[in-house]
Image 1 (cartoon, one colour):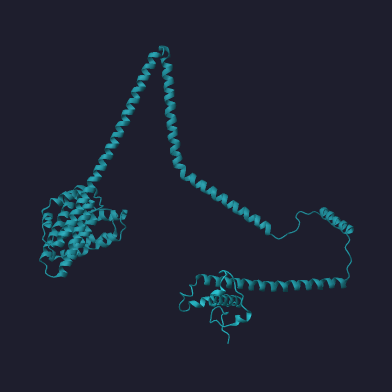
Image 2 (cartoon, helix red, strand yellow):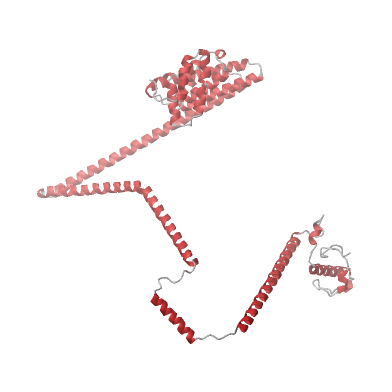
Length: 464
């Protein structure tokens, strides 16, 4: 059965049929690029795999893998890539009408060919003499085993065929440490796949059993309810008068119909509510957005009214204008203003100008003094922070003593006075210190403050 609407890239099937036998493996390698360029799990990839199977390209791959390696162009490189292509095409394929042929013939043949290739690579690896050749053969062997594992993960029913194969037993009986390690890793992965398969089957069986038990339980409950209903009905028939039996049956039918309608309406409303939930959510979201937008627009209009320029009185008639003018005239007559001459007016104007000038000049001076105060406060804060973070004079090294230098002369004078006081107190005889406390200050004459004491708090400069 040939597929309809196939991918144009799969036209290489005709090329394979027309090409000579030695060129077929190289042409089949183009399938790798087609598969790799298609997203995994997509419907397009499934369609491509179906086309590859329907055009017998998988059978061509099996024929190439069954040939002698020396006759294939590219050698083991081509063969290893073809094993990857075949395993990827077999996993995730839906054969359709040819499912029996695919599962019973093609898949077992592919697994057997992979094992045969692994045995051939094992023999070549053991007989190889060069280290580089051994590394290349080991790499190809790992590719073939990975392709076999990929095939077994997609079709776990092949695990039994692989474990019972004589080729697999020969692979396990190797004397090479590297080949043996690879084979044991493959065996461990196969066992894990088989264990996961059994776990899935057990879970599936348990789930089926639970569903069956639940179904039987529901059936028993339904039968028990029907039996109780019939027993209740028979007991009521024994109690009810024969003439009232028909009426009693009609009442029971009406009650039953009401119960059925109630449950049906509840189910229908719940179903409608679940269907309308997305639209209700959208409606609530739209209402919230509209409310927020209307509040924002109302705030904008309010601000616009507050800051809008005055546009005069609105809807002022001529009669109202005459009344307002009359009120203004009456107020002016009752409160006449004082008469001021032009000279007095000019004097008042000049005084006002002088006061304004004096105010602005004083304001500028005040701003400059405020800036000066802020600068001094910032400098003092910086000096305090440096002194707090500075090490002690005993531990100071390099340029660290410069941290104790202050650019403020009052600060320098105070520091010098404190230093002189400390020195005097230290150098004084012991009998002069009798009766003194440690916190008492010693007065130092002002002329001694000019004594040079190195670079300790001298205002940042040295006297000439």
